[in-house]
Image (tube, rainbow, N blue to C red; front, side, top):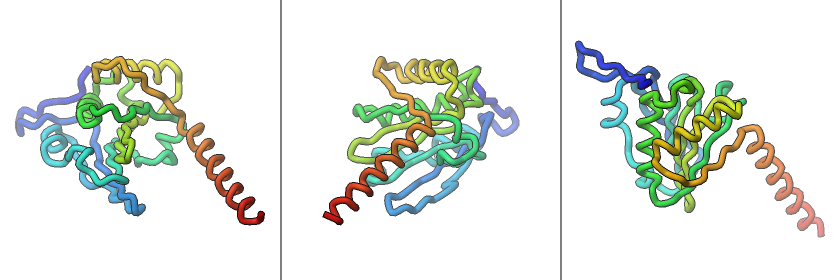
Length: 184
């Protein structure tokens, strides 16, 4: 069930949720709430630039307005993300996922959709963040995602808790390795 409602008085298509666009620069600067909107016209036509036009090292995120694009946010903390690696179609995938996400096309799991992140790197990727790691919810959202993208590509799901454990352990190994080399 789509969650876009047309307001007959103003002729604007209202969204069920409000969304915020976030921009992160490699320098560590986060520009929160670049803009937010609760209507389709404002969302699509005024604020979205194709992610491939971003400078390498920048991130674009669109999240529900009450959720921050960080795994520590209470809504994200026990969830995870579907990862889509660069295949030459990421700009198209970005728009398709955005439209399906803000349009509420993941019924009955719309409340589990948190947002989307585009990481502009040498090997760019998109990740769709969800609030749950329940196997049924994860699989159903993944299948709907593949359906809306009309692809048979394999996507990977990562729990936020496992990702950060791996990342912390890899940083410890690097740090310990450097310490060992320094002391030799």
